[in-house]
Image 1 (spheres, rainbow, N blue to C red):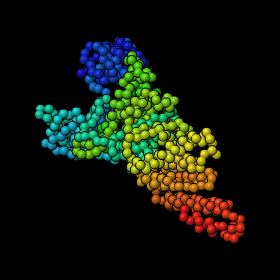
Image 2 (cartoon, rainbow, N blue to C red; image 1 turned 45 degrees about the vertical axis):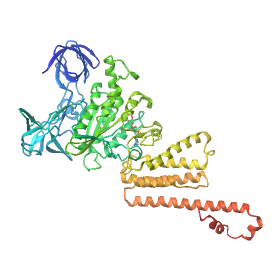
Image 3 (cartoon, rainbow, N blue to C red; image 1 turned 90 degrees about the horizontal axis):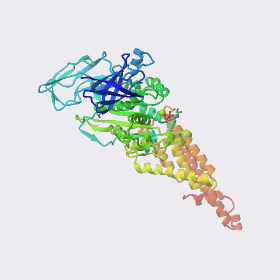
Image 4 (cartoon, helix red, strand yellow; image 1 turned 90 degrees about the vertical axis):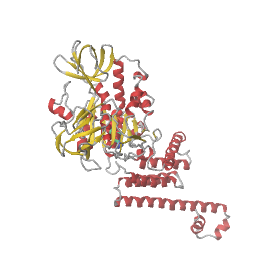
Length: 615
Ligand SMILES: Nc1ncnc2c1ncn2[C@@H]1O[C@H](COP(=O)(O)OP(=O)(O)OP(=O)(O)O)[C@@H](O)[C@H]1O
Ligand SMILES: [Mg+2]
């Protein structure tokens, strides 16, 4: 039952109305402009007879005294077949359809249902009359792209229900009744579509699982050094232009998950347009079909109203939870959560709440935690395992990781992939800082070996810093080689060329092999006569490893690159041996007396070979 009230204040996108009847916190209300346009809003605070609402549209044209219609329903989403491949806004309006119907310059107050009511889906029942079902049990399925989309018993159904009837296999529209459930005298008609409030976690499962299966991103630095798990959470903080969006896009294309939901939240419209233009033409590396078939894009650009931005991350996770409920592995990427936090700050300011650090609301950390907590790996009632992984980028002003949004995020996520401006400036992509980042998860490569390799990065950095002071001449050759090894590891392992068709995605078996090859070099006890030779050697190795990285797996080019790597190592070993011999011979020559040298005259090489062989 709707209630009606009257607007008493309009303050930016916050509107306060007075109402006599009972209204519900977080329910949807419509502010009715005098020209008949209804603007969607959400009740965010109730004080006596006053209701504060955040309006998801520009409030221009609203007047004091205008009517407000309060509904009973919480801000909810439509869930059902047809979500995949959609481009929607934070309130689930399908944007392409909206543009088709109302033109490209969208006016406030235009809404469309998210799911196509006319499309028919091939339904196959999975239950029969008399079967007992509980909430989220599968009643039937329809094919959606490459997946089976299960039609589930209503999520809010309490206890056990009996199937009274179920439609036979055939084509049905989503609003048609496909089953009837009964519980005593209660009857429930079920269609393919369900509604669920965005702010309430959707999770009907037997148990939560510890995230233990790695989510392969095919980015070496992530999978090997800072792994992410299916059902885990991670954040990508980075200064402006450090590569957050590009990294998320690469992940969305190559990560080994079933479904990706991208929430572009408060990003610049131009960037989002680029994504929208590009994505439908991309081929899914796993299926060979369009990538859009397993992707959903949620757009709330910086030019769209702030409140809708606030709800867009919840829209993303709710859809993510729905597909997890389907038994799939889902990845939600939010770009960027800082802009979402700014929306929270703006609303909190308008509500005149006591501000916390940097004027963010005091409950900022709770809100961030509540968002990431919706991720997780689960075991469903029928035994299938499914997961929802959440990755959010954070764009702290000036790259200052001490600010509240980054700090609040750090407390709740399982992995921190900090991007560094220095690395992106040096075009070392992905610009994940290997010394700042961390992950609580265990990856596929032995952690001891990973720690060994990581040690070179740390030592290499301190040698580099020392060289800044004492110069290359003042650095011992052993230290210089450590520095070169760290650089080598960085160049051939941490960095990945996103413009190369092969190097853009490095599968686990390839990572393992490369890691073995690289650690062999790191562990090898090189002996160089001088720094120039050392530099030349690592230059050659880097180049040859890069060729290996660019060669398709198992191709002749890859084998050739491998041979060249071995040849370079062998040549270096021979050269080192020769140099040692020469040095030893020279030393022997100096210490020996002149006449003796004259006696043993002819072949210094032959004598030196015999002495140097043991090494
Ligand atoms: N992996 C990569 N390979 C090559 N170039 C990259 C890579 N990542 C980022 N770049 C370069 O850096 C630029 C900025 O990247 P991106 O837009 O992802 O930064 P951002 O951190 O999202 O910035 P903002 O904070 O402004 O949103 C890109 O346009 C691209 O030129
Ligand atoms: Mg960006």
